[in-house]
Length: 435
Image (cartoon, rainbow, N blue to C red):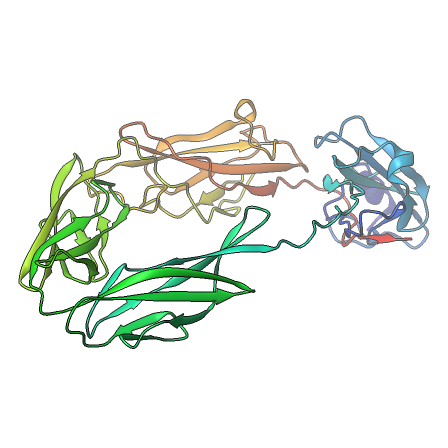
């Protein structure tokens, strides 16, 4: 390259690269920021051997790289150390690092893209609380079991700090009318009349008990009662249980055959009802069948109005997709087919998309600029120059989904993108290390 041409290019040097920082323990007071050496112009032409490269490194609290504070200037090396407190950085706050290259001829690059870093906070570990003491054991499970049948019992521990948690105790019972396994499953023997037994859970020096009736099975089942919520939101679930009543006055939990009267919901063998999507409230009947008897419960499937659509996912950018003086780039994303709660959108729903760009990584409302408004397609082509996007600075692109009734999703997770310009390559692969 001719010297005159090199001088002309040098007036437009810009860095394009990554300045990175390695996080280290919060109590360290000295950090080192480093970067790769700049050896080329932006067209990959090597910088001549007779020219030396120096560096100036800055920090700021402005992601737009205003109000710069110098960490080091006219540096011949590709690293420099700094003390966050001496620099006046706020502990726990976010600062942004940037740098530029300066040739020995006086030619300078643009500032490299801002690299954020959260200034570590020195945290004193809290004093651990004293160990809690177990104060009680509670046993849960059916109050009666039919002869030849089984019942499952569980135990909960209570500690002197007010906490409770499931426990795995040693199980026992005090009679010849039943046995209980190590997992808490009580198996009832045959009896000629109802018999009372006591189930005991022992754990950590504490015990809990529950009185259980072994029911003489010669008693006749007279009715089945269904318990559970009277309403379930669309897309939600509700758990139902059944209790049998015998002609000798005893009652006990039973495991019936479950059914539901409508296509608006389904129910599992364990009594878990799953509600479908409805356009208005729907009445259904839950039925429990056992021993020739049935029990029912009326349930309303509740239409939940104003359900918002899910946010768009997998946003990506490709390009340029055109050549010449105007360059177009293409932003694309996956189509939205569900509500935010995961339920599928009903057939016939209209989904429209609005596309934004901003220089604020927090996507604040006042910073958003539209690239497209309420379009049905899942791609948008745009010219960043025509859209006045900043050159050589990060911009964030996001998408919002809106249904035909005006219900809108949250903003999609944004992608960061830099509109590139000519200039020298920027420092890259930087780290911060403890000195």
